[in-house]
Length: 202
Image (cartoon, rainbow, N blue to C red; front, side, top):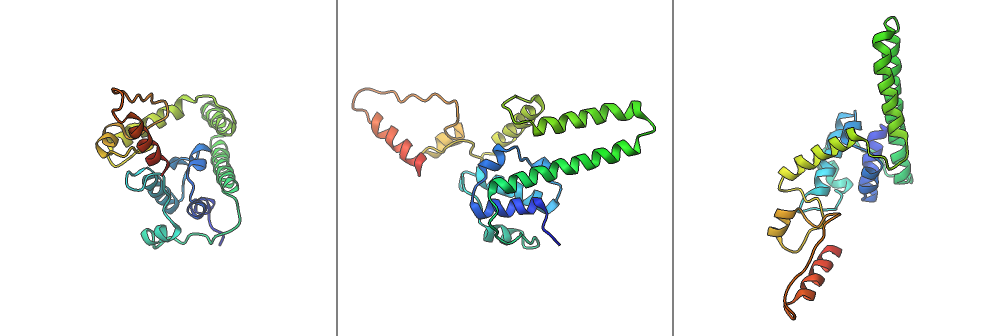
């Protein structure tokens, strides 16, 4: 039996050690219907954002150790970008299948069926559209996720600084931050800037 597209994506993330392209493509936890794949994806995201393992991806061995009942597909030569597209295509096909079933079941009541069917179609078109438009519903979900993560002191959203108390308060250096190092001449401003920069690079 062929592995699910969801587990294929999970295995590919572990093999190439990259998560950002997956998140940038719009892959979210709610798109996973396979229970095992959903749990592992959530684990990978937590690992990726944790202070102790920030910006790292758990290895295949680590995933298999934490989820011993799940059989990940073997390593293959498929690119991560292709695995992402396969996953998203499968997601759209599943949603279309559900929509067709719904329309068939409610065909005798078009007044009740059509509004929901139209909404589902609009959602599918929105997901497929390649643009930088801000979708309000997606923004609300992202804001809620950021709020939940902010309550979890283990989560680090930005690039960590060398100082834990500062990371605890700021959650790291984040996009949009305007940071000023201020002090009198010869007060180690350059040294501090270099320390922050090298720590961020590491």
